[in-house]
Length: 350
Image (cartoon, rainbow, N blue to C red; front, side, top):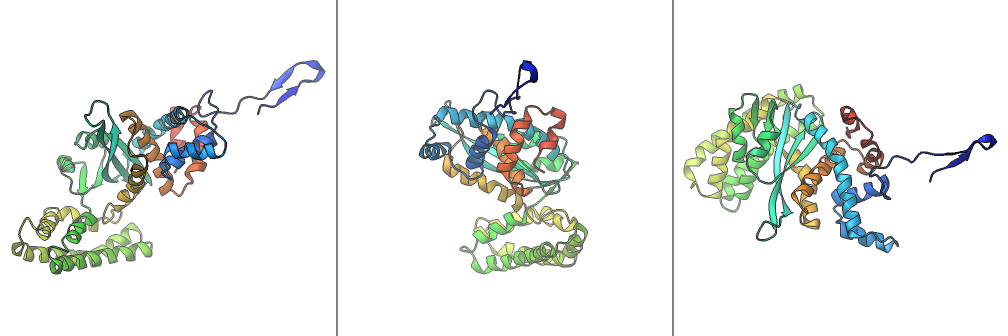
């Protein structure tokens, strides 16, 4: 609605300026666009289901229209995701993991291509970034982490081993991945697997104390030095004593071999209170993506997957900062186009 006012003495009419619109010449306002984005990427409601819901309320929105609105809304968030990318790399401690996404590709025999979202999380800055790559090779993290200095916490995927040669990056292991191998070995060797899992339970009990009592980084490191170091020494000795009594190809053998091969990286968390015992925080951030995959099955193209990565990055950052994603989008979408590139950092949901 644009108010009009007549000037005194018949000097003409003043018409109010148009309110800022996220998408130029688009009838959808920020609230509707925010609803569509949050419904799909936070609450995992595919666009065709949203269309059915709108239809029940007497609003017919063609598939091409709602798809275009989603695409243009995502495109608005890409510059913000780029700013987030630059900000997250300045962290001194990152967790990273990757997750597959099916992407439509006419050049493939079955019509789909398996791409990957590489997910980076900074606990010190409360930021998360989804970076879409067509493959699971080393090119993605190599490019992303160019210029990064600090601790990088990962699972045992061999691509991350390249960073061992980088003097600016110190690799940290994930205790949850090591524990998972022993959990999988329960059916193979229940007695030994349970003995190992008991050591892991003790390690996580120490972390629970620090978390529940809200320890500082220094207090957390001191607690780990007092309690976790001795537990880790016992676990290592137990594995060295048992590795000769199990077959290398058995589940329990693989669990022990995996853990011993990464032992120094797995123990590194005890020397720095800001480092987590595992990278479960980044895995938890990937879960909404896994749920979304079951609902909308695939991305429409590689470009669409990259745009979706921008949305997941912003929505994920909203979540870990306890910011309502709908309210943030409704307030921010109209501002992006009129914000200078140098000031986009002020719009991040932190």
